[in-house]
Structure formats: C-alpha cells, structure tokens
Amino acid sequence: MNDEKDPLLSPGDALMAENELLKLKLGLEHGMQLPESTLPPHIENQWLRSVYAFEQQFKDAKRIKVYDYIGQPTFRPLAELTAEEIHEERQRLEVIMENNNINLTFLCDYDESLIYRFITEELFHHEMDDMRIPGMTLHFTYEEFHPNHDYDIRRDSTDFLSAVYVREWNEEFDDIKIARETTYGGNVHDRRTIGGVIRAFQDAHYPLKLEQSEIREVQIQEDLSKAAVRIDIRVSGKRKTGASVQYTGVASIFFTRIEEFWYIERFELPGFGSR
Image 1 (spheres, one colour):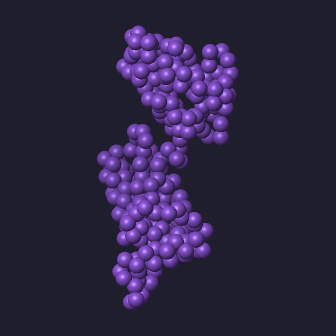
Image 2 (cartoon, one colour):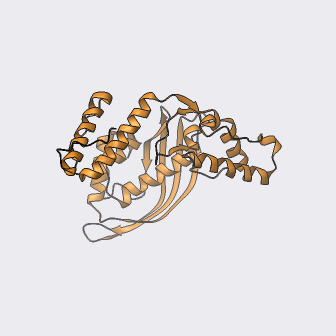
Image 3 (cartoon, one colour):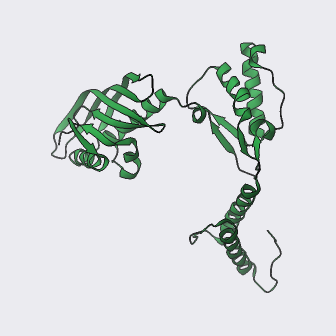
C-alpha cells in the first residue's frame, strides 16, 4: 500500500481517505463488502491493512508441504529412537514449527511415539498455503486428522446436561447437536419441539446445580454409526413454586453419526419433564 499522503489533507482526513481506499480495493479485488466500522480511524487502518495483506497473499499463495514450509529440518525415523529420544526430538520439532508460526495441539493425551509418528509421517506431508503474515499463526489439531469419537461424545454429553439443567437453552448453539428427529418420553420430536420442552422445564425451575456428573459408560458401535452414554448425576435446586427438588439417577444419552458428526437422537434424564 502506498504510504504517500495528499499534502492538502490533514493527517486525520488522509487516514480516513486511505481507509476508504482500502475498503474500495477489498471490494473490487476480493469481493468483500465491509460493514460500517465503529473503530477509531488509526485502529481501523491497521485492521484494513492486515486484511488486505492477507487477501493479497492468499490470492497468490501456492500450496506447500508443512515440511518444506518449516525449512526441511533433519529428523530421525521413529524406529531409531529410544523413548527418551522421542520426547526430545518431538520437542525440538515442535519448537521449529512454532518458530515458523505453526502450532500443533492435542485435545487428549497420547503416547509420545504416536505423536512423533504423526508429525514426521503425516503432518509433514500435509499441504498448506505458502503464506507468511506477521502475527499470524496456523493452528493444526491432531483430532482434525484423527477424530477422537470417545472424547467428542463425552464432551457433547456433558455439554447437553449443562444446557438442560444449569444454563439457559440456546437454540442457535444447542440445537445443532440435536438430531432432526429426537426421541424423548417415548415420542419423536423435531429440534424446535425439543427446544420448547427444555425451555418449559427450565421455566419451571430456578437455575439448578449439577452436583454430580460422572460418566459410567460410553458405548460406540464398531461401525461408528451409533453411540450411547450413561452418566450418574445428582441435580438440586428449587422450582419456581418454591419447592426444593433433587433429581438423582442415571442420565442416558444416545447418539447417531451423520456425515462425520455426532447428534443426540434419544435421551432419558432424571427429573426432566417435571414442571
């Protein structure tokens, strides 16, 4: 971007003019329609410059393997390393990646040999955009390559219990984990109906306290099409009538897998349905 300013404009007017020019260029060159900004002009200018730099690099970026992007560091095959050496080599390679603004995270704990094998035999061969923008870090998550279904189901189950008993049900956020048709109370409901039932339950209570939530069992079918979770729970609180309540027992949540994602298709929860 040309930093030369119009001598007839004040510094403030020149900055605002540059912002308008950047917006125009982003619209014409990259098809971006930006909303009106409430940022101070100098902050908006920094943001617009960053967006424009990113879009320019993205437009011209070639594909490159992660290994080439980080400078093709030397490394030893997993079979040649002792357990202690695996740990040291993994740390060394991760530092090299971080120095090249690449971050690798894991949602769960895994054996170090698995992590080292993943880095050297899989991630290094993964292609990415050959872009380098100051302050920008590219994040990779191991589970994006190898989904951990047990982790996903446990997380979704505890989130669902929280959404029912503890916090207010949010249609836009919580509905996405509910199957189009979900069975509750022996009847099949659509997402909107289930949301209405949950809100009716919550409207009858003050915010409840989930005192215990201990997963007893997770069963996942071998073909990864269905799963079931059973959780020991204890919930306490009050109804809007003033009566104290305690719901104790086993929460059963059943999942179906559709296009790589898990959805709740049936559930049975202690106390749920009490109004």
